[in-house]
Amino acid sequence: MRRLHLLWSKICKEILVGFNVLAARQVFSDLIEKARWRLLDYELLG
Image (cartoon, rainbow, N blue to C red; front, side, top):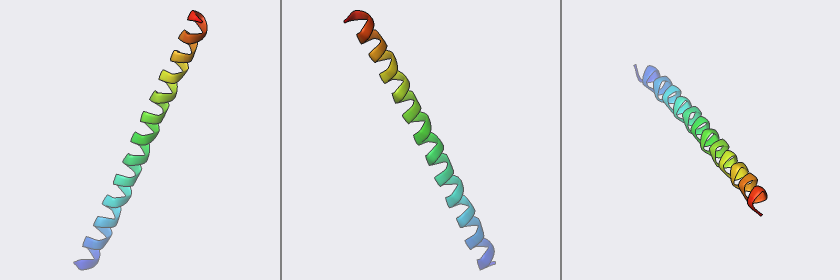
């Protein structure tokens, strides 16, 4: 029973880490996209 619990907590940890990585990537790509558009606006205006 204890083994199953350890396995389950390990799986949960892996899933959480995976979600964190995905979320971080999403935020990062959003930031890059915003920065790109801002640079584009700057070039058009400047």
